[in-house]
Length: 477
Ligand code: BYC
Image 1 (cartoon, rainbow, N blue to C red):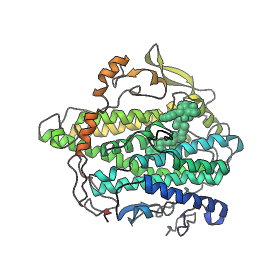
Image 2: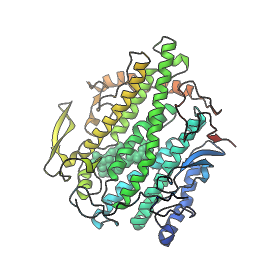
Image 3: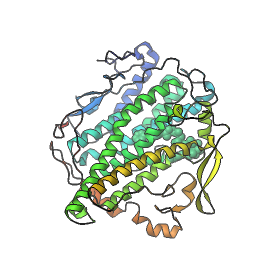
Image 4: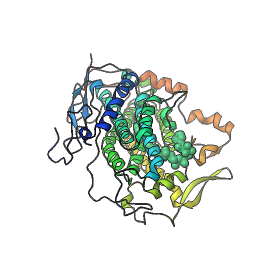
């Protein structure tokens, strides 16, 4: 099945499709095969709830140009989750930190074992968490096209879990195997064993949340994977490089999903000459803004504190680089450099200069914020082209934050510092209220007829893989 340009042989006939030579490593093969039934049980219990016969899905069968995007109708429970790493780069060298210039590692260096394991576990924990958060959405899909995209995102998050579990099993011995088991035991929102990072314990109860999640939270994934792709631990780097290819579709689902919601709202505002598209079957613009405020702020928390010794150590050790490390024009060691980070001084947002090494969470968050601004620009263009004066905006970085410098103060979207009382009195104007959520929920009626779409969003410009919008992307039992 693999394209002729694929350098790495993929074994797709194996119980676990892979391009890592599993058949030649019986111990690893057995370990992964013994993890597989637990994964299948988890998928059956915590994966997509809506029963379907089959779904038009993209499956990775290898990493080459032809191999990684194979399309066809498959029963979701029979999806073939495989282990795929990007092609090795011959003579790849560590690009940053104390080991800059040394050959990359094919095995885990003893002194970095626990730090690497921690990074892989945190990354791995987010993947099944998002599947859990989205498991009920199929019941209210606005079209077959959207339903198909949901399942695509879900199966790929499942594959990303496999990617991290492969690393844990292959390189971290018994502890790695135990951690791989824990990834299936923790659950999103669980009281006793929640997922590790905050945003992954929030609910994704409706499709507006799903689009916001795939825009803002998956985008954190893009940036974190981008830094792990730089890792001196080559198997992690190659794993993340391949995951990023799949991640692009998740970004697309979020970006175009919000485009389509904004476009529909704008159209109904214009057609009905009103500021409130709610009574006309769309999401009111101010509710879109509140959802945006929420998802952006919880996603900013995912980058950790403004300063972090963890991140300084990861960088110096060569484990986690910066976004586009190799394109940066500096010494890639950062030992004598400074950087400005957000802080709170006398109760007010301010900036302080710190050692650049400890500021790397901020460095990555800055890249992320710039990327998010481009989304807001494109949604505002839709409003502008509709002839509307209203605009969406990213809230201030200090708004609704629970991690880092701003966690101790209340900040309005405009950046004003508020007392607890003022915050309590005004937050309903900025974050989704129960009434907003109920309104959005009331719009979430499933539309499963090919070519039809719910009232609250526009159809996509194009279908998937050249198929039309009215293609039967999903068959029901
Ligand atoms: N919630 O020193 P700090 C994705 C903890 S998303 C709860 O600033 P550090 C995806 C932190 O662990 C990408 N706890 O932390 C998207 C630390 O704990 P300890 C996922 C938090 O290490 C959608 C303490 O607070 N990948 O792929 O510099 C769908 C002090 O913080 C949170 C990664 O994140 C939080 N939000 O930075 C599917 C990459 N934030 O040490 C998938 C791997 C911080 O005191 N992770 N804490 O026990 C990392 O690189 C880093 O661990 C973090 C945190 C950036 C997350």
